[in-house]
Length: 90
Figure 1: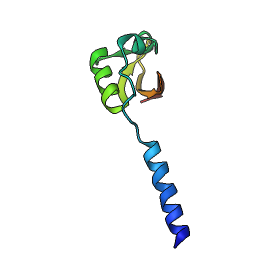
Figure 2: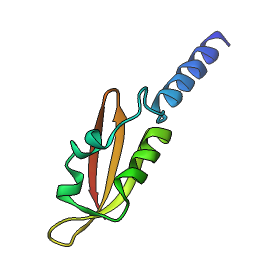
Figure 3: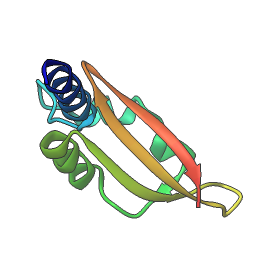
Figure 4: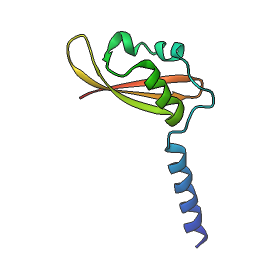
């Protein structure tokens, strides 16, 4: 029984740690532009709307089109004091 509680507790900790959380401090437009997503992709959403979601949810996924007209999903995640981006072709 003790072992079961320990495993359940560890599983709960892993699940909670994997969730995205709002950042400790709000990110600014400068922080967003440092990621260079707007120079790499054409994105329909405004920087302000992207920032609003990042500052509330901790992450956002938007659609972007590169210079070769390929569509991508662009994921922006708050990691401590910086933003990390991931690109996946649609």
